[in-house]
Image (cartoon, rainbow, N blue to C red; front, top):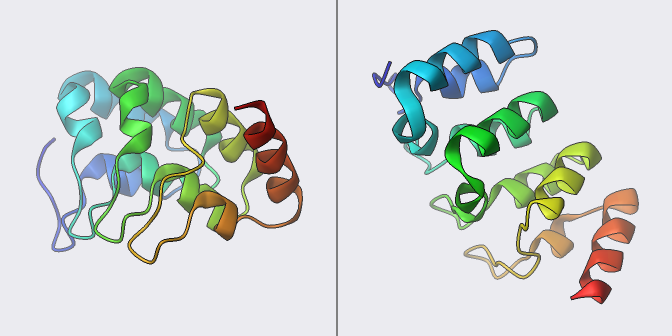
Length: 134
């Protein structure tokens, strides 16, 4: 369950890349627990980051439930968070969910960019509205 491939990815991370893998992910998180959810690959990406950039809203919700909301703020080696990954991939449903769970709009990656810098169109409007509420 905790084994990784040459890129440092666990079976949970690989399942997070593919559609219709929620059952596999649920099994893996049940067996591997929070430690598996928090594992990082060689780039520092967690399963939540992978799912956030691959249109996996149901898996994103499951991973936050299993790993806790604190994992939303974890950063990879480039400083990217799950919210930043979702903004880059333009996946509004994931962006909205992560913000509702408390994702920080002001976190910066190693280039100094925030999720707002990475957002486009509909996502940008939504994040600006959320920023006004803070």
